[in-house]
Length: 396
Image 1 (cartoon, rainbow, N blue to C red):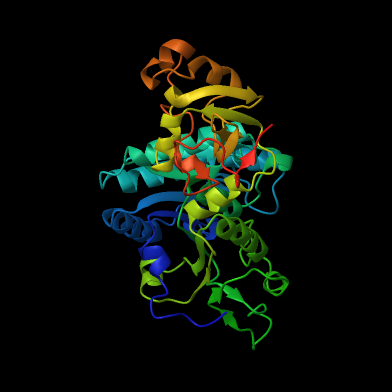
Image 2 (image 1 turned 180 degrees about the horizontal axis):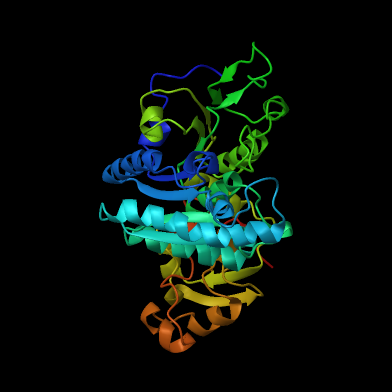
């Protein structure tokens, strides 16, 4: 918990993939209930600069309910669930239009993605959402994400876009998450109540002491608060992602961070890729097993993906996205990975070329049975010509 270092903005400027979250209090003028366009134009300039650096960018934006409630005459007090959903339905159109108008005038294609808590908790929906976001990024679009408040019930909502942004960062393997907020970072106590409250520039471990520093949202528009941001930080850093809490109300908020403005950085202990691999390797009970031939084993040891052609057998009951063991012909567990196919589909395509998948299954799936990004070797230094390896685990 030290002061800012000599290059405190490095996680932001050097990130390969960046998620930026914008709070309602920044985006919506509290007097008029309309988009704060003068501020939004400067944020868009920052986003364009990030993209010009070659960084892949995802925006998580609050504001739909705040924009819609004024239009519907819901000006004061807490909203009932159905009123929030109605306001979101009206405000989401205005929010999307504002981003579309400003970004597409600079030849950036904008994509609206609405997510619910279930989309990040249920495995199949998680994989579908991740695939959609990956495809949008590959095609050069800028995804703008909000919670799907129009259909989410109180029981299945995030309730704040801080945690939604952290889930998106986790889902997409982002290196850096920036929460632009109505506060400039974490303090040792509420600075509005305690004069001696210390500003916390860096957090390397989220301890009970750090959690005790969390307070409530200073804004009547937002639903997050500092505790939601701490919970978001837990999600982000466990996924290998740096996270920053920074004041967003100033013009060019991202540029201010890059220039050394006060903010709070949360540091992970691993990279996103390493954190993901650790999670896959740490699965206590894989749901199935796939047996491979010597050629596929050689490919895996060379850092390549597992193709259906190299699979000789599959057992167990598993669905797309489940963790499975990868076995040599002698039953030695050499790797674990997230399968792109269910056990039934795997049995139909194993031993066949990837070009045959569409004809065999009736749909075009992934070329790989397990992509290399979703696979971790459990043992190094193994020759593809060797069968049983004493130190590796045998699967009965």
